[in-house]
Image (cartoon, rainbow, N blue to C red; front, side, top):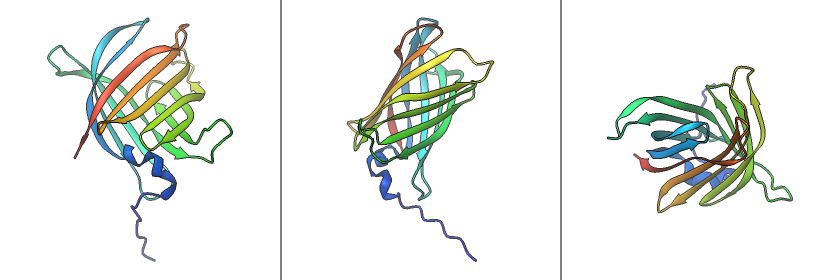
Length: 169
């Protein structure tokens, strides 16, 4: 038996199609418990024809000249479209972080915007306290712009990170 891979995008993923590709750029990270800093980021969002997208994000600290200083966060996961709920929820993002977190997001995806809130956060006994997140991704002038609010370390949900990424061929 010969297995052939169908790499066409699954039709269920149409609202997320604009995310597929490799993205790179920079942003700002800050929170009351950390010093604000500039960071670089690369995201690869891919698929193999099945009804989910694979997601990998890597970030690194940038110095004042824009040079990479050291690695920061890595997250890997999956995007899935789900049957619409009464509240409009039609998308899920499942993420795992090297720092000991697993996040389950649920929200609304449209052809140029996705807004998600954590439906669940799990952490290892050795991870820092983190209780909730809110993320928004948008296709703005063909760039991937995104923001994240976070509730952690006894702080209420508030701005944590934002970035603007360009598609890389």
